[in-house]
Length: 313
Length: 313
Image (cartoon, each protein chain N blue to C red):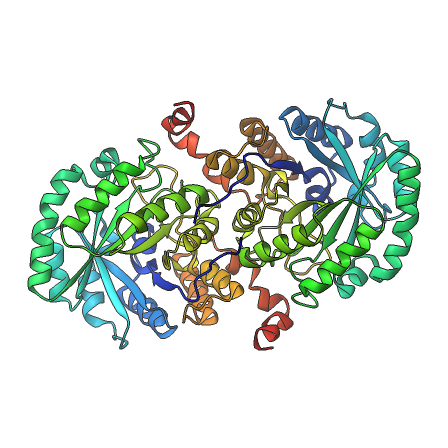
């Protein structure tokens, strides 16, 4: 059997949102802008720039409006922000962000803990979000959180995940992410669930979003690619996690994921060196070590210049 | 396409050798014995107990003779030790170890740096090792180091790896390991090289040995399984590395690998809880943090008792 690897993958940087929302220290607006502009300049095609949610819920994101208004746009880059209700969509539009992301947990307990609403209540609110967005020429993306397991309920059945996906597509969404909010996914499960998602919703552009809590993030990315998924989220320096998910730790580090893609000969369009420099800068700003193999050990190419040379040969 | 996952894998604990040989502090004989006996009691089928090499070369392994003589054997468990020459094989036999492992680097530069000998010179010496071992009813295993890249030479061609394998099988070995000495392997490369190895040497029992230097170890294990490999080395707590390989860091942690197998429903015969307790003990003994996701974050089952419950359901 020969393996079908994708020629290219689409990379989404979620550090400015998922990474920073869990930091005790709030980064200044200027630094957030530098981060967003930096990753776009490094060639990242999609940047999740922040979230328009209630400042009491996520104080780290309270300045997303100002960040969104001020950062310099790079032609061709997609900037999106997380929203939870109509107010968020309105704020996004007012700040010049024309793509928003709605998150629905596949687990009732997680939705309750995270947003104090049932999935059904959330969906009701999402309808007006989508209506407003589409009426204003905005795009809407969706994420299914706890898709690979819930810290309260354990594994969620694939039927439940597909049902959650159907609720999202019923709203008119054609782009969805399967999110491993708490780092519980394993590669066999990823392969199976991603294959099922693609087969049951062939019209949907699927993303995968992994945390490296139990060391399996890149194994899960690998399994996802083998199931035909080509869109992946990651966070610079491995920042991030979910404050409401006990035991959660960081997103898979962007530089670790991009380094693996480079080594596998899979195109990302992203300049790894620039991303490593940004990750190092970000680690300095947050002021603590983070889970990034590449920041610790360097790349294969650092180890041996010949490794880089062979790629041209 | 449906994925072919193995039903069972064979796990080899290399912590007492590859893990401890790089620690600045030498563990006492009693602690080494406790470690070896502990992993065997946890159900590990193969334990690499130490190495019979010159004490000046690896002072951490100078007491392997005493360790080997004293630890209590568990019926059915295979105990093996690393050797580099005839003297080592003789010491193994004298200490009651009847399986030895010979390592040949696929890279001339690495062999020179590691043992100050060319691969050809090493092979000459291996002949008498194998002759003595087989004459005395001992088994001999082989490892190909830098199989996925050399810190000095970069990527080694697959032809060179197969040639190295042929030199080892010519000696009469039927068990070989592809070793990612410096954590440079990526899953695509692993899949391709492992598939080639199995197809060119179908009579050989292949092992894979990964370090998690750049976060890809479990992705590489995943790719190895998909290529049909079912034997994997790992080291408790993620200890280990190669002192002569710049930038090297630890072996993939046994508990991380075993946790992934449990989550994937792949049988190992090993009690994960006992291994985690041993890993935690070992981390205390070496007195510094090590690269173990499970020691940091806990298992999925710790997070949610339901995750464990579903396995019985």
